[in-house]
Length: 313
Length: 186
Image (cartoon, rainbow over all chains, first blue to last red; front, side, top):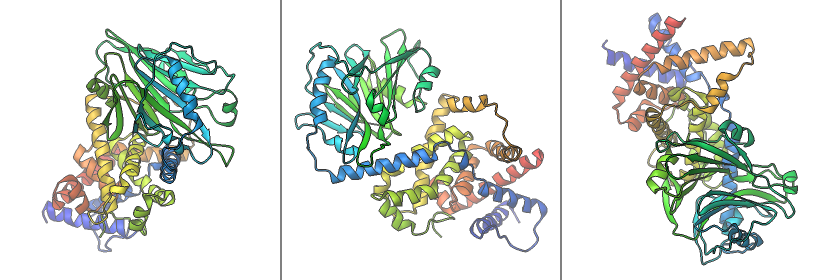
């Protein structure tokens, strides 16, 4: 019997072993051969999946996303919700010249995905997922200060991130100097780039709430992380915000965290890692595994942003 | 025989319904999660990376399941083609930028002594993973597709571009090598 014959016999025995609850031919086989079959049985029967930390969370997230997609299908498009009217002044108030981004938690009856239709007809919209979207808007710079219940982070000149809480609250943005400190403050694993242009290193990390004040009593806070890398050129910013459905104590009310990226410049639909993504002048935006991402900088090219984004681990 | 040794009952109907029905998708997820996770684990070794890759695979399955055509190939073959691509992409990136995840660091820092039976079970599993890690990348991939994914040699051949006979010979040699490594460790 040459090796190919032995291999064929072995594979037949392995298939029998895998198909028929471990039964193999009753005929006697050499000890070494039987031990090889034991190894095969051990390989097939050892289950490492109890080690998984994310099995249940991933299941919940995927099923929530299906629910959200189903809601999207059921809703009629082009409905106008009050949140949009509230958001527009906020966008303007941030005073962003080129790019801005709003992280928000919306609270409304009927399912979280419905808000994905909160757009008027005169803007370009790229739907990145049920919870993330990028849109071209007609914002103008006013220089007005943020309202008391708002917060904002300037990513670089011409780009900022803002959010708001209920009226009368004063949402806090925390600033830390190490990734470990930032990791302590968020509920997801912060991904860091393995690739950065030469000479760049983490300068600062900020953690900002999506919702604070009385809302936080009803829904868990789910802050996002904002990483700033300094180097010989202009700063590079990487934003990571968890999105998706949020558990609600009221069965009649659905809540979700959305990631809205807005620009008054050109907005281009691109693909990143097989995900729909948006590219706006110097910022790349996409959603992956329940996290909304943004990679940008004033001198950033699409190729460089993709390279940094691909290296996130 | 279908593309996999263990087939989910009513799988074809479930896959069709899973495009829109969370309950059907959940049944597929529950059935395949251990196999995808174990496949990733045999190929990459550490638990956090296997978790990340498994999440990537099911995210892609959710996005693409509407495009799956049962008349073209069995569902398991389609699913593990996605899993194989995810792991291969990861390994390519890994070769460029070796790294250690935060979770892995945290695991190493853990000082709580586990119970004795857990220690024995973990040692046995670690021993198996270490033995698999000594195989060549191709052998490791075939072992993972055969024993974790539960695919037939024919399906493995279609996925990898090898002949069915070649798959059988590589698996035979791989298990023989594993047997030798494990015998030395005994």
